[in-house]
Image (cartoon, rainbow, N blue to C red; front, side, top):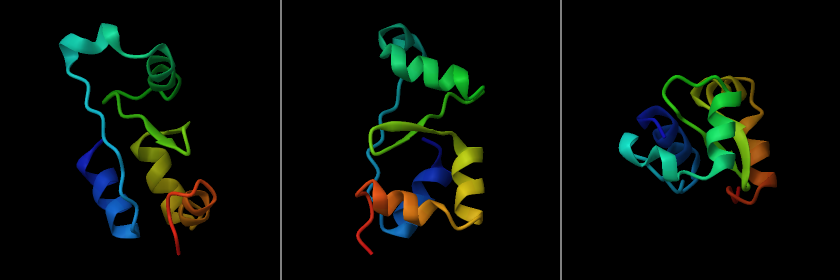
Length: 82
């Protein structure tokens, strides 16, 4: 997860779980994560899951935050207790 996404979530009061995958370990990564990254056409291989479901990468997180939709999504997933 990029530093930007992590800082945004921490700033909102979410304690994100971060799993970083080294390039040489990519073959062992779960197929769902690989499919999610490919589906998002994400160059940096960033994949954000909210409530156990693939949400998107940095662009989707930022767009959702700017539109004001991110906090309700996090609340619904139980990741935010406001």
